[in-house]
Image 1 (tube, rainbow, N blue to C red):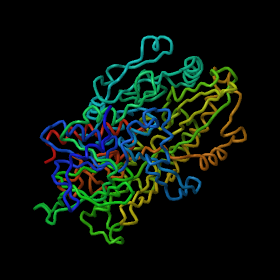
Image 2 (cartoon, rainbow, N blue to C red):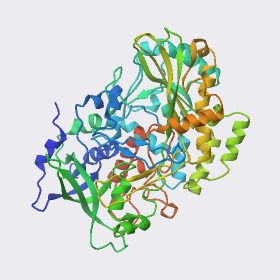
Image 3 (cartoon, one colour):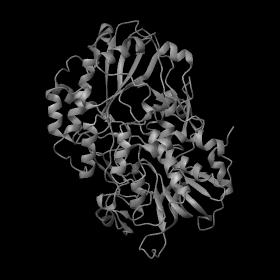
Image 4 (cartoon, rainbow, N blue to C red):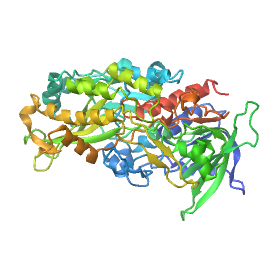
Amino acid sequence: MFPPPRMLLSAILLLATGTVAITYDYVVVGGGATGLSLAVRLSEDPTKSVVVLEAGASGIGNPNITNLRLNAGNFGTANDWQFVTVSQVDAGNRTQAQIQGKVLGGGSAINSGMYLRGNKAEYDALETLGATGWNWDSMFAAVKKSEHFHPPSQTEIDTLGLTYNPEYHGFSGPISIAIQAINVSRFFPEFAVPTLQGLGHIMNVDPNGGFHNGPSWDFLTALPDSSTRSYAVSGYYLPVINRTNLHVMTESQGSKILWSAAKTTGGLATATGVEYISFNTSGIPKTQTINAKNVIISGGTLNSPKILELSGVGDPAVLSPLGIDVVVDLPGVGANLCNQPLTTASYLLKNGTVDAGNAIRSAIIDIEPFSSYLKGADLQRSEELLATKPDLLSEAQFAVMKTLITEGVPQMEFAWNIAADANNVSTLTFDRLILVKPLSRGTVHINSTNPLADPVIDPKYLSAPHDKFAFVKGVQYTRTIVDTEPLKSIIVGPVVPDASVQTEEDFLNYVNTASVSEHHFVGTSAMTPRLEGGVVDPSLIVYGTSNVRVADNSIIANLPGIHTVSLAYMVAERAAEIIKAGEIQ
């Protein structure tokens, strides 16, 4: 039985001033999927000392974490930052919950475990935007390093038709990946697959090799044939928990970077460590400091900008009104926030389609380009809407997005879920109807110098006219799917939205009232040129600093059409390669 990470604090000496007595080589602010994994990789060098500051608890042994099917039990709890947006004008004037993990392992500890990598063109586009060396080839190699793939059994291959390509996978990494094969009923091979094929959606043998168009079986971050989660804690950290040069401090919230009074001869700001807040047993906060030669911010897309801004790195228009001295004028901090909108649609099936009391969650994921469901006049309308650049989207990103759409990179996800209640009433739910590559961009900024205050989050969901149009059409397309044989033969009718929802305007009203966030945030510390709103260079160094890096999904300027846990591990492994290779001094 592994001890909880807090026990490691016994090895850390605090001076009377509240400063940790040693100077670390690296302090990683944020113990999420990227931060914790990166820290483990950096500590592989026994001559380097690494400390991780995680705001949340360890979460080790919590069944809502270890069991993937119980993951929603973390939402709105202490394991979630419980952020909320400002009112979203283009999404029904509603505020929306923004789930981000506040527990060791971050999002990898509380997500649904769905694992997708995206298309080669999406990663090569990152390099086009200025992230030199961050392309499909480098990211593909990095993610395979993180993976321990468990192939399906021969029985599963023979009876269910499960498929994979071994060349696309790693087999010795820390994170277990397996195809969702638990309780997969005859519904999928007998009804779902042939229906999709009839619509021209050809099954993808394995979506993990740089082409994820079309339906495929669902890959999960889980142990094979079980619901046991594999995540940054179980995969990366616990096997090396006794490593003496790696310290993990939970319930320790990084608050700001500490700076040397003098800048380098090149005018760069140099960090000397970080300030963090810990809480005693009575919940009273105490401010302490850690000295470090290198600072790595890994707070996640919604928190990393907050830490930078509290440290004086950001847009003077945000910092100066709060009385924060500007250390580095960097307007891109907190800009370019991108996330995916999600909604659902469900249909009643004839009794007996699914065994009573059974549920199969997203055994098939179908990710399609616009051309799969936009036809004729709708396709023409799409082209017209794409002629105008949305607000807050850079010219460079707009050009990249239009190219990716033209090339047929997937834009819409249809995830299938079937279930039967105790009375044998069966339902098909598209439980994840996701616009996976939105054009809309928003912001996240501080409006207080209090490090415990939430940032102001304004994703501007569906503000780009093309997003709303394409999303509505995608939801509406589920009616075409269920009206196609052989699926049509077992469909009774729509449940949500109900049969009264028929026209495009009806579906628009539904989306405005029923869409939510998918919590796949990227972009707020973008790896693009400084003059184009970038925050970090291709070596992860924050512009204007000598030894501060950001390593999390916030550095990804343009969101691949995926579930982003794979991206978090890509960033961790790629960052470790760069740092350990000495490309950063």
